[in-house]
Amino acid sequence: MGNAETMNEMLRELIAIAARHAHGRRTRTAIPRVTIGRSEIPSPPLPELCQPTALFVLQGAKSVLLGDRTLRYEAGSYFVYAVETPATSQLIEASAACPYLAIGFALDVGSIATLLIDHEPAVGGDGFVTCLADDDLLDAWRRMLRLLDRPAEISVLAPMIEREILFRLLQGPQGGKLHQLARADGRLSRIRRATAWIRTHYNEPIEVRQLADLAHMSNAAFHRHFKAATAMSPIQYQKQVRLLEARHLLIAQPGNAARVAFEVGYESASQFTREYARQFGLPPARDAARLLARGEVAALEVD
Image (tube, rainbow, N blue to C red; front, side, top):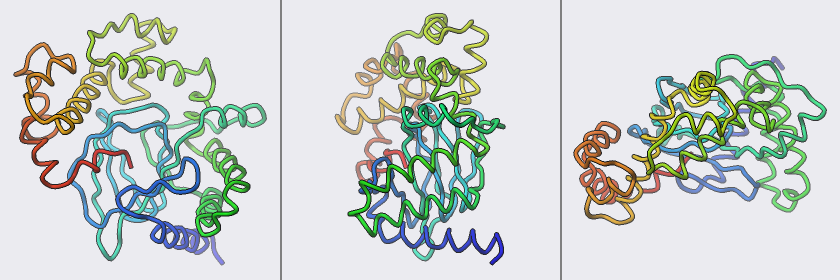
C-alpha cells in the first residue's frame, strides 16, 4: 500500500471514530486533554481566546485570523498554539453529509519539558503556517482515538501515546515552538508570562516597559518576540482580551453597555462601542441579544 493510501486510510479511521464520539460542537472526551470539535454548518467569524493547544483538523476546513496573519486548515493539517492568543475563527467547509471534525490536544508543558531532556526538537519555520500530519503522527492519533472504544485501557495507554504524540510534534515543523514553550528561559515561556499578566490585568493601563521587564527582555526584543508569538502588539492583544471579556459580561449580565465598557477598562463608552462593533459586527447590546436569541453562546468556547 502506498504512502498516500496509508495516510488516507488512517485519516478515514480517525474521522469515523471522531464522528462516533462527538456530541455537540465541542466534546470533552474520556482521554485527558483531548477534545473533539464537530459542526454540520459553516460558521460566521467567531472571536475566541485560543489556549496552548495542538489543533488537528480531520475533515472540512477552517480559517483562523491571528492578528495580521491568516491560517487555513485543510483535512489532515494541524497547528500548535504555543501561547494564549486572541483569534477569529471561521468554519468554511462543513455540512451534514461531511461535517467539520477536529481534535484538540491541550498542551502539558511539564510533559514536553521531560521529553526535552532526551530529545532535541526540529528547527522551527514560519510560526503561522498549518502543517500536514505525517504517517507517524497520524498513526499515534489513530491509536489514541481507538481508546475511546476501549475506555478501560485509557488510564494505562493514553499517557504513553500522549508522550509519543508530543514527541512527534517536537520532531515536526512546529517543534521549535514547543521547545521554547517548555524551557523556563525560552522566549515563548517568557512571553507567556507577559500574556498572562495582560489577561489578569486587562482592565488596567498597560506599561510595555513593565511587561518587557517581566519577560526579562529589552523593549525592542520584547516587541519583536511578542509579535512573533501572537501576530499582534501587546496593546492590540490587550484590546482583543478586553473585547472578548466584554462580550462574556454582556451575555452573562445583559444591560448597560456603558457599565461594561468601564468595567473592562475603557475610559470612553463611545470608543468601546466603535471598537466592539468593528470586532463583532454589531454594537454591544445588539450583538449580545443576537447571540442569546440564536443560542450561539456555546460558540464562544474554544474548539
